[in-house]
Image 1 (cartoon, rainbow, N blue to C red):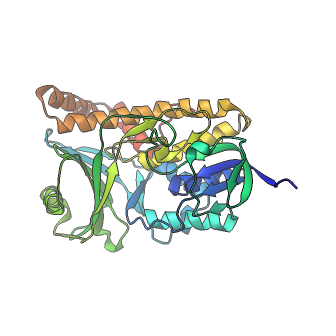
Image 2: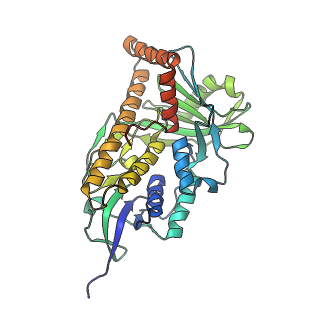
Image 3: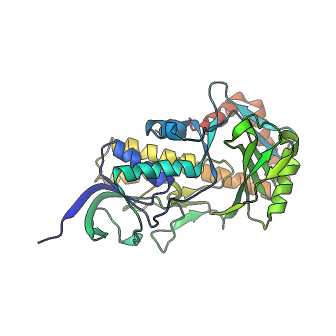
Length: 373
């Protein structure tokens, strides 16, 4: 007797945030989905997540947003400072918040619970990605499966030894993430400070009395926690008052990349790209990956290679623009020359002087800017 073959529409490799949310979005379309993960434990990621307006709407449609137990912290204003220009750039939107800050671990727990409830997640699966291809019979936990499409969302750069080469800008930085309590109300303001060692972002963190913030400092230079504390105190004691840091500091590698197209796979999230955290839009771009894929599924048969190739070409446009822009900004600030400094001043002046440019920035920050539909 032949082994029974279980036929599915999608296999998703990786049950991180973007992989889990992709699965939930596909299930909402009544498609048959299986998710595999190499670990059995939900990652306890203590970082916060900046969710723009577009991503919030996406989570609302999936029925996830209202299940967050910790009230999201709104971002009502974004203030950008640097070591070159004397005046800050200030962006705000009168109609709605420019974003919300939530805890990664809380969103991850809800998404994973939904996968478990739907009985579409298999954990502790070790699989060679190179062995996977659409319609090929695949053995998982002593059962045999066939998939029309394979989605890769493993949350890290795909190396040539796994599947394919990636386009990279540099050897990458490290991001240092932590929290601090402060004397003054943060007033729902988010800050981005560009200094010569790398960008420092300070975001309002969900906490009572608006007196806790999270920071993300990215650099390719050696640093220590005392140096990071000194940098934050120097630039934020005036606005935040007395600062008391948490003991824990989290360190994460950042390798900006864009993965090349492969006909057998659909990449989403960090498997498709990773951008420098200057813009703070990496996760929100992952949500746009999911949204773009959902639109194309309504137009093309799942078996069609055009679905994969058109998805990649469309996402390549927006992701490449972010990739190039954030890498350029980081390079300009970390390599001060007369030309670089004047280039930055010119960009500052444009944002200060032209309302159209400011509105484009606000739409981009909120995820409302559509480069291709």
